[in-house]
Length: 149
Image (tube, rainbow, N blue to C red; front, side, top):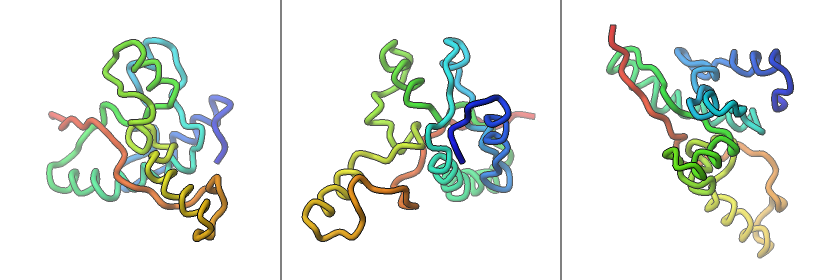
């Protein structure tokens, strides 16, 4: 999937089902982006969807089964929204510390370093820079609030 360039494309991204109870749109809202009129959608939707599915399947669905319906208050941040939040003291860490956490469509620096060092020594089989793959480390970051009926 390409980065959304229209409202319809963004709507299509939002309709991607990540798991039984969650869609991508559940994770795209940001108070920072809304208030400061910034776009908050991924540059690499495929990687963000993969990370979101992992988050939902490994953490959110088990939590939902155990505690009931949960709502997501904060999850995905585009690098631009996260950078803005960090620069304006809006409770965001720097981008590098959020790769693979709030910024779902960027790999963590340690993953990139290990891939680079393997490939530079000639002992790796994949090219540098790495192509898209399905290797993810850690779990994307979220803030979850229990829904109160």
